[in-house]
Amino acid sequence: MNVVTTRFGVIQAPDSLAVRMVDGLVGYRGHTRFIHLADPVAAGLSWLQSLEAPELAFALVPPPLAVADYHLELRPGDLQSLELDDERSALTYLILNRGDDGGLAVNLQGPLLFNPARRLGRQVVLTSRRYAVRFPIGGRQALPMTPAAPARELRPLRAIA
Image 1 (cartoon, one colour):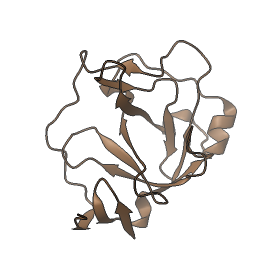
Image 2: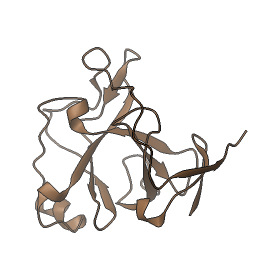
Image 3: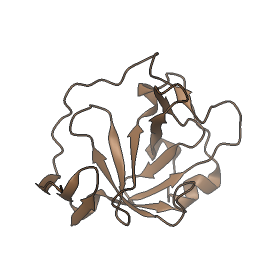
């Protein structure tokens, strides 16, 4: 499929990268169709790019890149909505954003969970105050900026001016 994006231009991606976000994302409930792309420069960084809105993309990192002791306890409804039998099968990502001080921060209270086999995703909103919405990571641990492995199934078509 050809995907028009404002960040990456037009890209060609296989249907296998498409993900349906159950219930959308907080603040973007109407957007449920995305692709999950590896960043071409930063290892560990990936993007959740909307298939419905070219300008809508979220930077994602796995929890260990942001905080060492992050642990989720999923509710049965979370597992059921992702069609998962076991929470160990879920892939977990955190949304990366700008912190209050201008550095990098992650949302520990609204992680994204994915069932890669069923191509389903869901944002879980944790009600505990244990985790912050904007947890700063800029000064604690920088994301590795080594080139990522080439994205196997992605081919840029052309740049958009």
